[in-house]
Image (cartoon, rainbow, N blue to C red; front, top):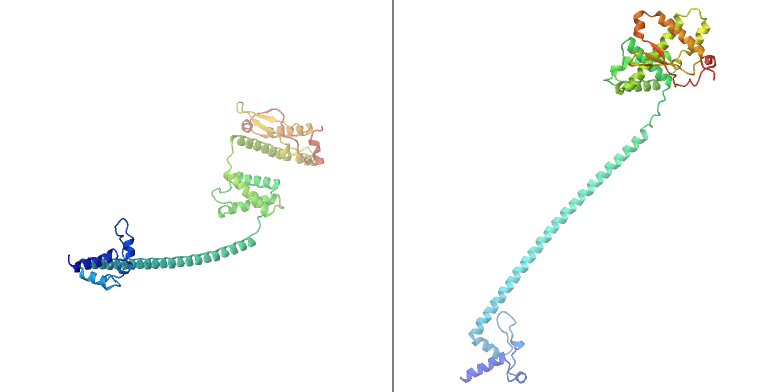
Amino acid sequence: MSGQDDLMNNDVSDVIYGSSDEDNNAAVGGKRKFHFRKSILPTKTIGFQSSTPKARRIVASNPTTNKELDFVNNNNNNNRGQQADAETQETQSFDMEAHLMKERLENNTKLIENLVKEMRSMRVRVEKLEAENASLRSTTTRKKPKVVVRDSTRSHVRNCYRELEEKHNLGFKLDHRVSGPANADFVNRLKQDVLGLDPTIKDDEMNEQIRIYFNSKKYYQPTESDKKANRRKERKKGKLAYRIETLADKVKSTPEDQKAKIRNVLTFDFMSSEESDDETGEFRVRPLRWRSDKCDNIFASLDKRYIKSLSAQAKRQRGKRVMGVFSCRPAPKEVPDEDSWAIRKV
């Protein structure tokens, strides 16, 4: 090998292994320690930048080294280009995300503004409704007190209705309202008849009892026991009616003052009830235990006079009366002193 080659090799060795005594002394086991000098490492993509002319001459005279440097430079350029592209993509992605976040923020802001407007409008409507409710409470009248209907008013309405129904074939039209125009004429006539019996009845009491009686006619469906009780009441009413009529027309010899006393006790409370026997067709009279013997004799005399005035056919239709057990019905609570003769003395 020529001296120039040795020189080149020595220089290269200096570049690769180093030529200083310190490096040679640092060899281990007769072998030289491998390292690079920092001063000749490549710092830019254009090649090695060495501080010594010897290293520059070695690089310039070695084609292999030049190709390697070009490859390194190209790789560095590619890496930097890829890095720039990645940074650009990252920047674009960041900008897009920022734009999307801005749009979302704007949409959320608009949504919040709309919700706030709706809440304000709802608050205004609620306040308006509260004001209307308060005005309604202040203007609404209190619940009307319950109308008290006396027993006498109930009896008058019931009796007048039955009289109009039996004698004139009049009554409520149950398919219409009691206060409607279809029932107006009948209700007015019923009121006139009731006021003829008791002029002290007020309008609210009259209207309430007529309404109650209308509902009882419309909705009440009597049972078999109710029908029997109604028939007993009707027989008692019939008995009372013919006794009054007999006292007025058939009794001539009794003074008027005595007839007036008898007329005072001819009431529904002093009439005994009669129960029908379906097997025999007879009626069992249940006498009143508390009624005096004098009253019983007067009523029996009136019954005889009435039966005597009937025709044979009317007598057969009337049915036979027989005495039954005493009634458990108590005596009237309030009996005037002039009528006390009709009550049995205990």
